[in-house]
Length: 232
Image 1: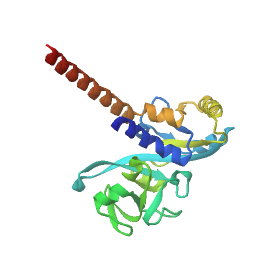
Image 2: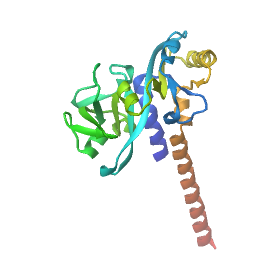
Image 3: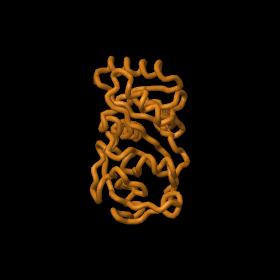
Image 4: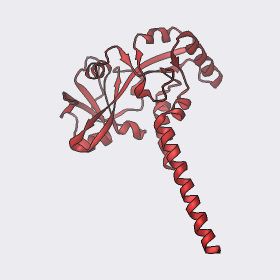
């Protein structure tokens, strides 16, 4: 149940935003380790069947004083389709022109004891919390969002993203699969799995699934031994 909910929460992120394909560097099963040139967005947009391309940079930061080792940070362009499913419950959403501004997921805001208007130090850089948001995904509620260029500068990854989220002009499975082949054949060195395939192959998801099977196996063995002992 835990493993299934873990995967479902991750998948809900893409479903809420209408994302069909996730473009990452070929050979990377974890988006955090992917690195692509942001200028690739123009090439992707020109491919037949692509409706919209949204660059995304994902990284992690820690808040040792609050015992938070790795909080997910999303770098998005303000106003992009990636903000679908993000509902501000305090303050406002990111706007074009924002720089040292950040939105906190409901869970992170509660843990850090921050609200809209409060200052916040992230990796030694001063920010202002402009809003607190809520999402249907547990992952997003435990993350934060800042402007893409700000995160690029803070992490020393100017001009880079970890992936592109693509919306297809046609929503049927055959068209999406055809678009995936066109992207991979047009741009070398990238993989374009569907949102579902990307979630299923993610390192954290696979680890959670493996742990779930291992736990079930141990429970089965212990139960069998206990039953055999009773019968003997």
